[in-house]
Length: 150
Length: 418
Ligand SMILES: Cc1ncc(COP(=O)(O)O)c(C=O)c1O
Image 1 (tube, each protein chain N blue to C red):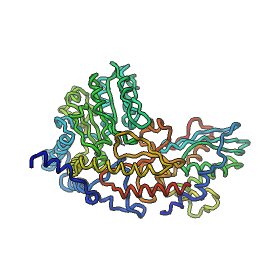
Image 2 (image 1 turned 90 degrees about the vertical axis):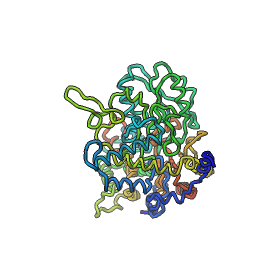
Image 3 (image 1 turned 180 degrees about the vertical axis):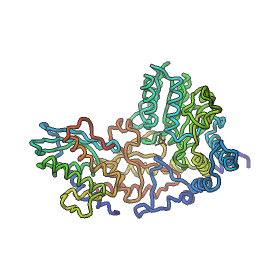
């Protein structure tokens, strides 16, 4: 890949500049903190889960364009989904950004997440793209402490 | 013409950067289809052909273990290894080769001193002074020691320009202070610290000082006797030499008082199950088969740097630093982190609303290699309340055209995010 637009797609730039669901949630049922010590990306993730459904989700923090856009897009995608579905989406997303996606897999089924396919060519940026998701999984498991990429 | 005149002529010789670049094969390569612009010299430097060839020749014609065989190759290998030590001694102007210990790098050298000095001389309640701008490798070994011995780590702060506050240093000194360990040139701020002054102050109270020369070694001539430091440490890979080799210089009278660091072959004179007699300096601290080719490669690198000469290197690098600083300052949303009055050719910067990682990745598309992150100096980042910086670091093979490319690249970054 030699075109930087393949990595920094408009959708990614838009979400990083104007992130969705970017606020604190006072009545969250699950809260988790994600941190990438290598680059200092640092997010708080807030969830409201009822009957196994993610009713609401938001985040707040600082990070690079890839990590911020990923967090923003993640929140808009998992809102209203069941925990099970969210985990399934993460698995596919993880395969996508690590370049391990099955050839026959229809990338378009990932919706907006497909814009992160370019990340697979930048191994050091995979952590940026997955930080919010790892934090989500830990939040859902109510794992204490900070989710770190290291 | 007398000697002084000859010397002056030599010093005035300016550096031919285009000719120098031909010595570095990697500088001719393309990265992402673009000519490599390598501005990450603080992380590691590129290697000149003479170093690469010297190391190849060793493996092709001279390879054997050292100090162990009576056969011809072992004799050659041992000789070359010890010759390398002499090259380093002369380079640092150490009094004797006994003071030159081959280690893996700066990190291992500091660990060696923290371990051995710590074991013998640090006890509960003692204090060790470092600074706020140290690399993690000059923080963590002392922290480990302090935890073990219930000693205390004291920190010299720096001001917002990135200059150590020396008056605070003097205030920290007490009769509990047993060691001072300070970086010569900061890898994240570029600050050149007044190490000679620091050493003088510490010595006034008879406190030994270690100087972390990881960054200074490629930019300035080091004379350990003139500096007066008790320890000076650096890594070969930041001096155009190979990775895995570094130097611990220590004053003989102190090294002699230290216990061994690791046990094994080479560091002993005789071993019985009852008692082992340790080897003399410097081998006492070199247990096991050393990085022979590394030492030989490093000595070749030193010869190469000397052939260019530190005088011309410093003049040229200052020009690069000034040119780059001026050009970067013209970018309104860019802020330079580290504006000490004396700096090495290292510029850390941040750009409003753009994360350093994104800067690094987009510059990479242009074939420009810079470093982004906290540069193993998290306390420095904390001081400025930033998660990371982008850092361009120059050396004598960089050009003003490369700096222009960096500036163009940064303008492109800003455009992508505007
Ligand atoms: C100031 C400083 N100290 C210590 C080190 C550690 O050097 P090494 O990783 O070669 O042991 C570095 C290298 O990044 C450095 O810049």
